[in-house]
Image (cartoon, rainbow, N blue to C red; front, side):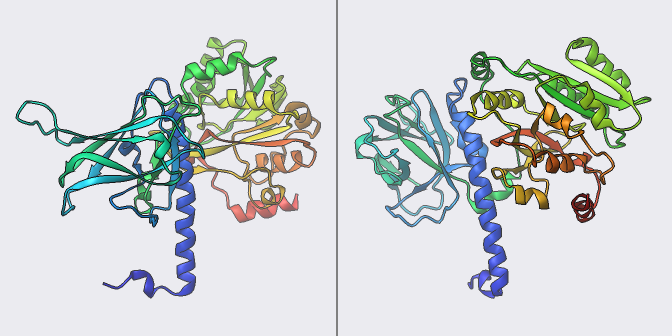
Length: 432
């Protein structure tokens, strides 16, 4: 059978290669973000790779020719079990050695890996014991970023299996091996939607306790009229603020005088009297909210969007840890549907003033020094529904230190996006 790609013209092949490269980069970043949180969670001892459409980079013969280009490595920690599914139903002979791609961190590791393979469904022998095939690999013999052979203690016939990989004597610091994972390009549709995960709350609270002189962060919520915004959307938005691990915040809401959400926002104010401020207005919603702010930094939250539970903590940590006190910080973001699965993660580049002129790439979550923003007279709210982009363009002309936090800290509810023409908006802002 001929290769379908052979019928493509040169420019079509280039487009296909570019699309594949885009997905490879995107999925690779997702692998790193998802597995990093999971593997270091003290509450999770079993990491089931198939739940995240991941598999180890494995082969059945020694070979350095891998067609699985989307890869990321994770440490094999003591106290953790990594599980994946192994399908050998099409095999014609029994398997005696399984080759797995490992990493050593460029050092000799004095630890051992134990591979256990279970029949799925379980197979019981004549003594009533579950049949298990095992293999061991000594750390000092492991080759860095190469296939490493696990010699099975008995042949493995064709069938479906579950594999468990453990390193019971790893010290989780120096003597620790790494497992390479892959997400095949052909299965990229599985990564269209995913569930956001973060470090355990206990770990984050320990980081919070280490902050000295934590800054007050003012969150601006301009509650303009939006027909698609529901009470449920707004409640989720407000709840994401009040449930922040970082406690040093204030919420500054500006709303229409006769807003249909008056009962909702005033109820939140009653429960958080010292932290929720409300001002009613008919115009200048952004600047009205800004005038309520007393924090060292301000954040703009769009109605219906959601902050991750650690969003403010990550921003405060960066402010505390950076050598130069930042004037502006921005994070990565993704989108959510009404039932809250995440999709379309946007992993942003570091500060790029030229890129900002063509698109509002810094987006949200953005943090801005309050006194500088007020000195620049805040927001110009008549700018083609793009007051935030215009503000950032003006703000960054005077900001001395701008920092990117490469973590998804903001979930954008795409169904509530402003329906404006991007080209017209770009021309309007550039003319301004």
